[in-house]
Length: 331
Image 1 (cartoon, rainbow, N blue to C red):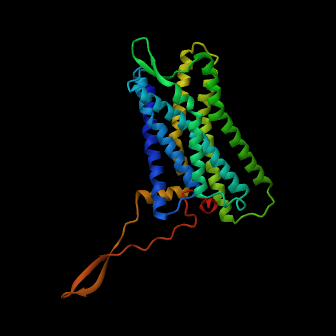
Image 2 (cartoon, rainbow, N blue to C red):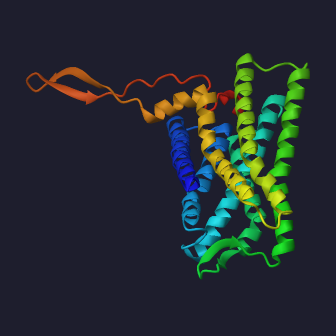
């Protein structure tokens, strides 16, 4: 009974937090008419997390109904595909973000023409397309499964449940977790190797500081993701060798699922804690600067005073000009 409550709290916090991040970045982009590479990655992570959390109410309803599905076959397919797609897009976006950090740290000038918002948007589009191809089996086989009491459940109905479940679990594990994890670890190792042994001319100090801050935040986001999802994928592999799961295994599996969902509401708090620029932009988005009223003491028609609205002079933006603390670096 406590699991639906935990899921409900995670869902509420995640929806509010990710909606706030999306609003902040969109608001900042409108005010500055400029979007940067880190903005695009963070915005897409928040959108993916938001979509992922939108499926939680259906999961909560299933838990409360002992696995019964009441929303029809089409919604079963859509929600299952949305869930799988969100997991994969998240890992692929994190991989792309890590590669961007590599270019920003190891080749800050050489590949500056590649690290543009347009290229980042193109990469995000390719990530979504690759994810849709990856989850084709989900679109094909998600459906309603009859239960003994006459009701139905939403499940993945593979043609050969024994062998197909085995291969699909490995397929999902390697494409959605193991391969991205290996790439991210290798890239961050290369970054650390470069930082510790670099003798090349260094970019300006302000640029190095901003690059370091964004790279540190990217590392934190990746660590949070893989720590939260590792138990789920580990138990998926263990489940392949378990014929009849015990009650303890079921509890552990539900905890692992809740950790995976919890990751989707953690990222916004990472941005707030680690990025001073994001905190400032969040405050600007929540409390925008209002126009001041100034009295123009020009007399007309027997001494009446004309009052007009005069916009407050625009404030000088910080040199970074970014949602992330590496704005110059991301251009």
